[in-house]
Length: 138
Image (cartoon, rainbow, N blue to C red; front, top):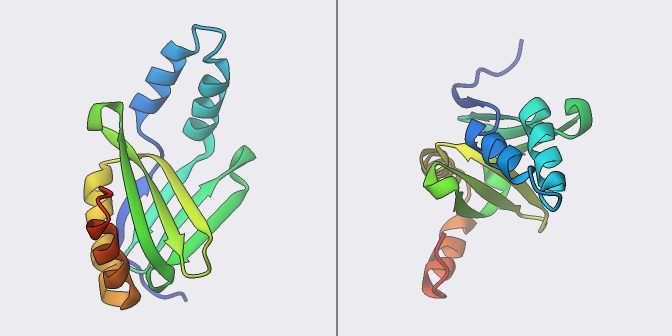
């Protein structure tokens, strides 16, 4: 019997990412972007709970990354698709990064993760203040 987790968000990338990249794929230059979007649509899954962030992806969905909130020291978000979805990068204590691409409702997900990280990691507040002070929007 495992520890109970309350799931906030579970699902795949935003469908708009696939649609836009298929349209771009009509050009020869856009074919690699289209292949990437199709792979994401088929095998990328996010699971965000009150304890951790899990990303399952890679070829045939064989790669899985789990990050607990106390390991996160910085979060950067970038809107995509006229703000309907976005990308996020979670920087961990050891300097590694976890990318979340084409996250639906990314603003709400960002706020949820930030709230959990602030409660679990006292170093996060210093990183957030530093980020605001250097003029970088995030």
